[in-house]
Image (cartoon, rainbow, N blue to C red; front, side, top):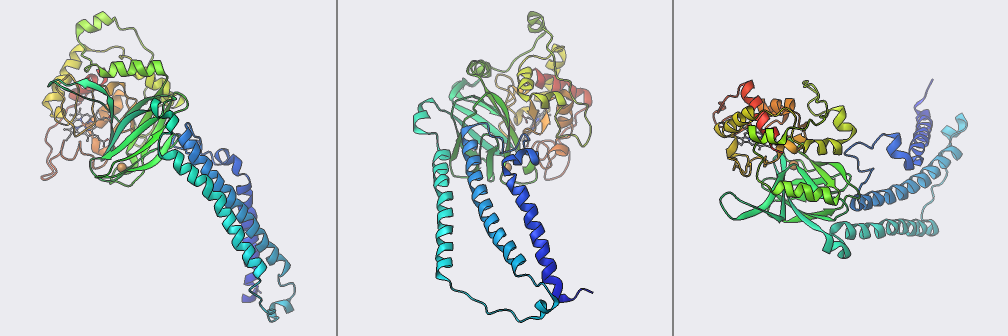
Amino acid sequence: MTSPRSAPRTFSRLTTALFAGLSLIFLSGCKLTEIFNLSGPQSTMVSAGPVAKAQWDLFMVTVWVTTFIFIVVGAVLAYAQFKFRAKTEADEHATPPPQGHGNPFVEIGLIAGSVLLLVIIAIPTLRGIWYTHDVPEDEKANAMEVTATGYQWWFKFEYPSEMVPLPTGGEAPLVTGNELVVPAGVPVRVQLRTVDVIHSFWIPKLAGKVDMMPNRGNFLWFKADKPGYFYGQCAEYCGESHAIMRFRVIALSAPEYARWLENQKQAARTVTAESLAAAAATPTAKFASLKFEAGSALAASPGFDANPLAAWQDMQKPEPGENAQLIATGRKLFADKTCISCHAVRGHEGIGITGPDLTRVGARTTIAAGVLENTPERMHAWIKDPNHYKPGNKMFNGGYVDVDTGTAKFQLTDPEIDALVAYLHSLK
Ligand code: HEC
Ligand SMILES: [Cu+2]
């Protein structure tokens, strides 16, 4: 029969087993990413630039120091529990031996040891804070600047040093939405702004997180070691669709970036029967788009996942089988259905600033701020029911539906949406 007295023994065995198990996991710390398969697109454990690398290295310093503490304290505890355990029934009833305390040697030793461990953590921490704060002096001359602005629930990117002419005269910085394209190997200093609540800017493999604060100019910097395709995510709770407020960073080689920039600066592409005939549409291989199924909304197609950068490059080319007639219908609908009041299409009718700039939306790999792969099926599904994919979003609330009365402001038929998709996908 178990008496209440044997509870300490059971407890001691349990803690020893727990300790042994945890030690095993921690001792394999160097292989953490493989053991737990933590190398996904939003993993901080696989860094692709010096800022994220510095953050990861600092994390590992604390992991090793605390692992050391865990093992030493755990070993002393396990030793004491084993050595002084109650061995016989009589031991369990014995009065405890006199309790001692106040050994100055042990106490000063423990204080000195703790201070030493804190110093070991503090030195790289301070160095890391310094390094990740701003572009290092010797790289400043080479750095570029962009402004990222958080909106519930998407991101606007501006290139203050790349001016584009406005239809009304004058010029303004180049604007893109949800996909930030940068040259690889170049330090990028990002000014962080918000138009509404607090958001936080985070590109797990490159840098972060720094808050986008109302009425306060924050910034961060990052550099991508090599060309690549990176996932970004808002990291500060900002309302209903916070968890799916995402973005992408595409780092390109210098010549490819220059080509991209040149194309971005042009007005929106206009497709006509003549322009199509002139281009004599060279067929391009497209990634097989996923058939749309409820529940798989956030998934990308296997072709996309296998090589997102190649998928992005593929999106830059005009799609085969463009239909100038359908595209023209879509362009007209884009104006008639009030889309133009919220979305800018530079050079066409769109002049709105409430939603993402769509001047080259056809060349983006994702829509709805990194949530849906930009296939015609998914863009169709998004335009048909934006609230299904992003609850509370401003395109639906206030755009499609009058928030005060709850009545629909306009209806779209499937053929109309197809025309809108054809138009938006022609914007490369
Ligand atoms: C009331 C303003 C408003 C109106 C009207 C509106 N939109 Fe939007 N749209 C938005 C906002 C805001 C977003 C961003 C939603 C998000 O990701 O949170 C958006 C996102 C989009 C996107 C995805 C862009 C991207 O890069 O993520 C597309 C495509 C789009 N809208 C098309 C349309 C079309 C087509 C119409 C007209 C039928 C339309 N919108 C009408 C505000 C609007
Ligand atoms: Cu947010």
